[in-house]
Image 1 (cartoon, rainbow, N blue to C red):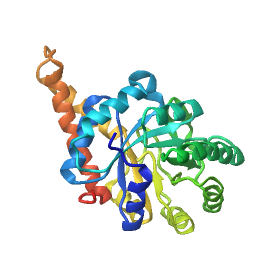
Image 2 (image 1 turned 135 degrees about the horizontal axis):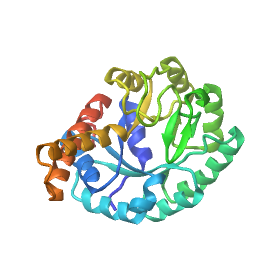
Image 3 (image 1 turned 90 degrees about the horizontal axis):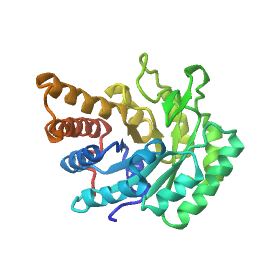
Image 4 (image 1 turned 120 degrees about the vertical axis):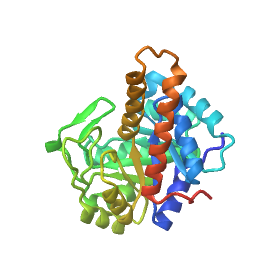
Length: 285
């Protein structure tokens, strides 16, 4: 498959001060929309699947669909497993042809997170697959795991430096005030903390839970060193909103293409919007 290791995309972004959009595949229409939107914007693209959706769609299915959709695209694309919490899922993704995986042991004790991450890095790097890890815990629900806002822990910059040195990860997801899912209020990002982490690590940083974060805050996060930004909820809402509009116009509609097509178009426009905000438009090499 014509996939790039995510490390390559993020190193370019790190060196040139922009961020690559990481968009979650929920079905074929989402995959088609992301590829079309990124191609139109001439932007690098990270397609990702969360561990939660594996039973619904299947890793092999995602891999084969991605291969078919991107084979004639001119943009660099990485295929990434998002929030892999089980070693078995990570190995399965690598075997299915994914070019990047995330080991999320952020809910574990610091030393256990290091040990689990080192194990994944050793295996993944041996076959040219990139690795993302997470330090700190982000509020909200992801893959069926919920973290209350009061229990969310921001990433400690010094711990982050130690973590990266001991694990050798290619990208680090940091907790600086975002949340998974739909926000109940306005997110307040700790840009000072983000800036300090970037200075200490001098490597690609990842922002999870970006749906619902203001355009200006996203631009500021990129300015302070974020190079990969994860979106999912925004795209789901755009797709669902358009489908609901179709049914409101004609409740008797049953032809799947007549509502999935417009839903896909809505996701294309939302993808282009995010790419522009992140500064990755025109950065496909």
